Image (cartoon, rainbow, N blue to C red; front, side, top):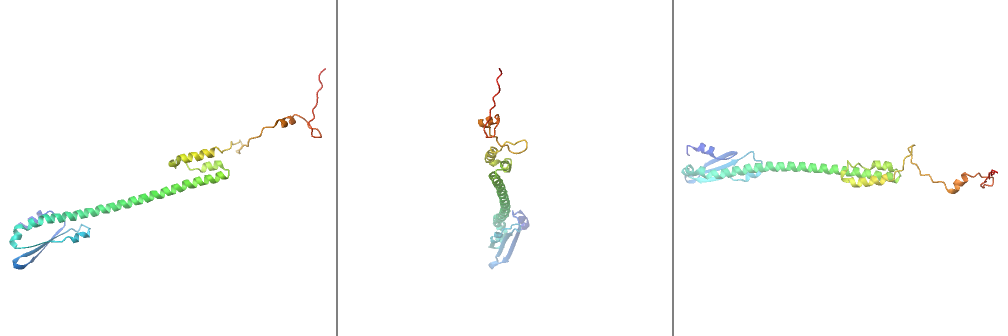
Length: 208
């Protein structure tokens, strides 16, 4: 072969291990197979790439061997590198997908827990309202700052409960409105009652 054999090997553009198998064929020909293997490529599909096989005389190999293998070796090398890049990208995609899935599931669980807390609070308020405990019911209605998306519903519920509050007295109990005395009661209060239950009027002596 050409004395520049190894220099020409060095000039080839490839990544991996270049394997050359040389055997003698018929009529003084040589059979040369060239296989590129890239251990960094994790895709088993690389094993489906066949070796380059040439059957020619030694003179023909000297004159054109490297020209024959240059382009195919570069192509195969590029394919394997791309396959490895593709695998790494797919691993990253799966990783990101798993992270997004976990993030989505976490957000879903948080939303379910938040919805349950809101429903429980409103249900407790309804229960206390039925018992006539309007102020306690008002306190159990969820806070708008915690559930801003339910702001309108919360305001309506609190407003409805506020309208049912009784005016508190100085003793902390609700004051019941006192009925106004009737005209008959007012008259009776100013008139002494005799033994028969009738109102006894007394006439005063007029000044002479």
